[in-house]
Image (cartoon, rainbow, N blue to C red; front, side, top):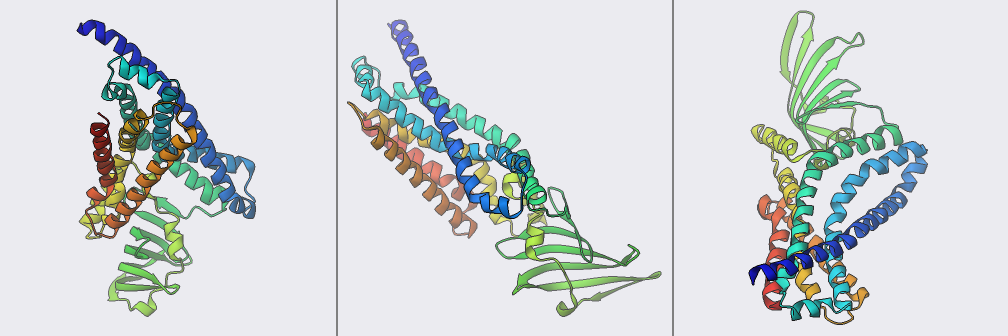
Length: 365
């Protein structure tokens, strides 16, 4: 009896998997195309203002597509799940499955398995392809489109910047605090010889100028070396905060391992890295949004019986997806401000949707 039951069930699972993939792949492609079109119109003014070549513009959007894939995969999954069950309901196949003794959890197995595979693939994708391509499209944007000179040399931990007064070494540029930390300035003379080294623990960009704390200058005069405190009014930095931000790698340009190393490095320096902790945990949480959203979509789609409206189905998917992103944005904001721990901030949306989906499963039975 078990063998006779499992054989038809495997046929049903293959059929449902095929139906889901037949929906998911074109929906994913459509979402990516829509994303590209919106981004083209959004950046059209910048491209025209800087007279960007067609080749540079094309490579910018081409390198940005992997990041777009990361963003649109969870909405594509929930839309595909709802449309799959919507089509099954329109053809009365859900009723037939129930009449044949196949429960909703059994029906959900192939869809949830594929959603889990998509999540794992998204995690690998985000760790390998996305950081490389993100660095590429940032380079095209800054150097080839905006025509900015290459002023910074980057590592995963610090920034080397060629400025007007010499070379700057910066441990961290904080966008939120509008400050730089552990700044070292190697000042050179006209003959490119080192004349002094300035160490600044923290410099903040306020009202269009830098205000520094604990600045010390080590002057080199011939064979003598003299250290003295440098008053804030005598500290001259020609570059602005935006100049330094332009050469700092953003979290999407780093893999999980690289970002974790940056957090550890800043923490050892005594710099608050809580803002990066939310981004760090989100690199693991976001790929698994596909599972959380599919878990909610399956019982909603499974309740569709006869001739469901496709517009209503898509509307439900949009509403659920929008609720997820709102909840995720809220929890991220709370995590970045320190109101809740970063780990909870990154995973709370997934956890709540898994709980909600499980409740819907139990209710549907």
